[in-house]
Image 1 (cartoon, rainbow, N blue to C red):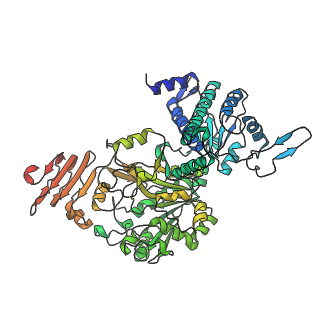
Image 2 (image 1 turned 135 degrees about the vertical axis):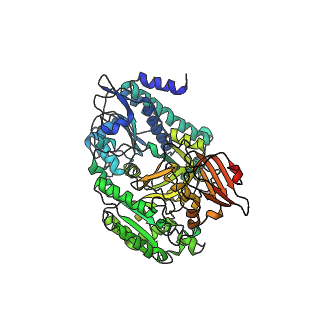
Image 3 (image 1 turned 45 degrees about the vertical axis):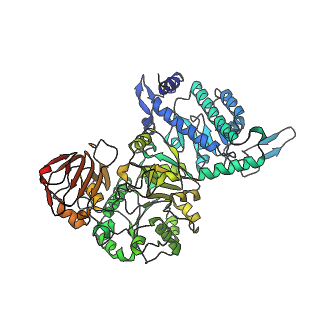
Length: 615
């Protein structure tokens, strides 16, 4: 019997899988269905969420100054929680459970707390604001949810199938389960072991009881220094879905978003005289068309107003403005901004020449835009979040699901990352909930040779809290093109997106991939072909004869089918017919002076072709 099956059996003995007769819409993701008119909670998902919450509590407890507030109103649970809190350093549960009933126990914590009478002293609020609130009985509607959300304090809570959406959306780490006495005993035991284990690890860093204060200070500073070089990566599939039932809440959230796109990335290396945003990538649509169509779809679906800010350098501004004429009838608020040859801050300027400057540092150009007074205007309009789109990424998505996660967890900085082409890592991230990774595990260079030794690629698409930007906008060290910038924000994460949402357009090899049958798009978003079995995209390497877009179009009558292709390498004077199918590893290398034509309808699978006789 595996360890997993043993743990699942343990959960089943606690009746954690037995839900209520009513299952709310947002809770259906955690259930199997109904039996005897009662919802059945998926024990596997309970276990995943439980591990997630315990991992968060363990990470939080590594800071010696951290504290927890345990909330309980059920007298059956009280002896269990008393035993837990007697073994770990935390606020008294008796005091917590009585304080919440009086309302304002968190938001009024700055007011006088101690009053003396003739016989006793009353304490009306915690003397220190907790770093986390753990709620065992969410059935009782309390002000704890509202006050913790207002103060940005994360909530770990047991949730059952009947929890209302207005409370569920405030829980940072929900644990779906029936709050039976047996399950509460199990989770309290696990919390105790996790916190005691972290305390034991911290003690092992020193010299036991004889450790000096100097050793403790050095150990603490070392742990804080290492934590600042770590990134919490949350897989996209584990984000809570937005409620489709409450359109009003979704509209209110999306109305706080603004999308920013920099159009300075040029297509000169592909023979295109203009910004990459105007290159036709598929079915006559350009990257600018895709982002506008996404916003149009969201505005139509939710009745919201998401503005699009376009930052254009001087040499591309006229082309972009001319292209915007076709969007005049769409329900999209587009604001093009013309930038000079240099940004307002010389420290933001790249030293690699004009072309290099035009195609890099889009995050710092965003800061330049914010410094121009636009930030104050956006805040006055009620905008709180900004998505800064990577100009090189054609598959970037204006995703309400990510925005919802940022709002629920008070996240100030979020960088979209994607696993490298290592199949093992992709499978690991697909099956795990989240993980903490070092900054040296990330790279912004996505070339095949450069990703070796790295676990993630920083896609350079950023989700930012505008209020946090307002606080840091005058900091000259702020550089949004560097993942280490997250140290400057109070709450920052990385979200691991699928590889299908990071499709750079830097060469005709990338264009070949986009125009193939591997991808289609709907409502401005690229959709991967379900027939593709491999989790990674095929490797495409077209020779210099295909470097320019004009040559690329002439040499392909139609783009071959590559759903089952692993890699393609083409060199020399090669011409492709129509309806060609490529599978496995294909190498086409025409000898110098030889013109090689691939006939219509041919199927090439794991072949190396040097002359017409090889076909």
